[in-house]
Length: 569
Image (cartoon, rainbow, N blue to C red; front, side, top):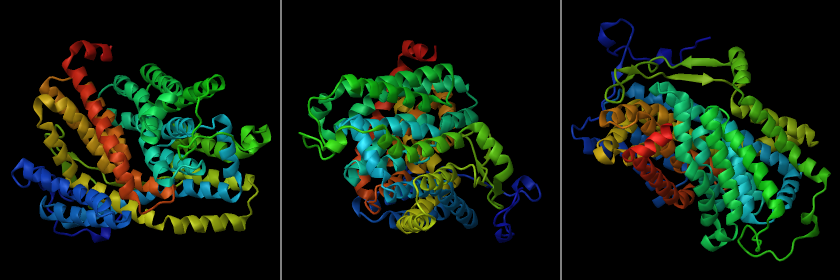
């Protein structure tokens, strides 16, 4: 069923495209100031305002997002000459996307967490995780890196940060650290998140072979699968404390990276993260049975000399009771992420709602695309197949299994609604900002500025991917926006389009941790909404340095043909 949104509100004065009756259009302009550097500064202004409001002025997330959104509307209409009704419609579409599916992932995850706390199961989970390892550094690897990769592969869209952040809080990590570290850990898996969606989208916009793209992306990320766990523990506990547990870090990183590369090269993008996370988990747990660190640190990085007896050994019944709600969550997230199951539900429950007056009205133009291409503006209301719906059903079933009565469930539900109300506003405003940035062409103007770097394009082209994910909150969106630009520019410069298209995704994963949407999810999950500026200050330098390292790696591959031949087989 097709329903046209806002059809009654479309002005009658829109000019028809190429004389075709009933078809309207607006062509994006990427240099409205007629000086590329000035147009670039205008395009960057909303993001600069957003970061300044969060980091410098330390305003709360919803206020910062609304201010930046207002600036974006002014720039879009006043500088880039976007018709007001298109700017408003794109903002509304973005806000709707922010509420569903993004906020609809955050809300049920927090609802699930609150239910386990109410039932007393979260305390049991803490005991069980301490039973695997008492050391906070190894717990961080287990939860943020390995579990996070699994949830990224199965669901994506903020799920790993929300789930892992709440678990880390329960283990005694400070809320700010839990939020920042969960974001930092959620890097390398992002390129294959939600069953390989970013790579599938990259193939769709570039036409490049999916298996080759998957292989190149995995090869670029393999060194970072090993580096990021070391980086994570260093950021948490310091260099000396990191060196004390280097064998465990190496085991987790190598097992994850090797499995990711193997599955990517021989199977494709769909099960890369899930397979790598499961293998890494098994190897990591087995390794900890034969190796222990000399020093045991708690979540405040203090030495633990002894543990309470209740934490030294967990009976099977305790482990089962603690694990049941999270096993239910894992089962439902996995099933809901299965393409066949999703497609089956979609056929009978999904509504696709084209936004009348915006759908296929805005045209992207060369050099971003070979020929003018209309931007689709369709709100997909997959109310049952959405990941958040699977999590919500899992939460309700887990509540019943845990023995909670309906009154208690309703009380927890209302508490979750109240505690996430500002998060809802923030995510809606941020996605409104992201969509007006996309439909107006502000992001493309920024990307084209990077594309002017010539010889240094492999490095700065990688940063295009970083910028795309940082501004949209999604590696998938970054690939859709800039994948074809990367391919086109690479061909013009005589560079392998596979390398640069993959570099867009590889750089993009490093931008995930600084995306405002991700930061808001992390702050909400860890109970410190309003501290988004502090979280951004914590993760920004890590994100930028890792993106630059990815840019260096891409440059080496481009300018050393023997390495490129090795990568492409």
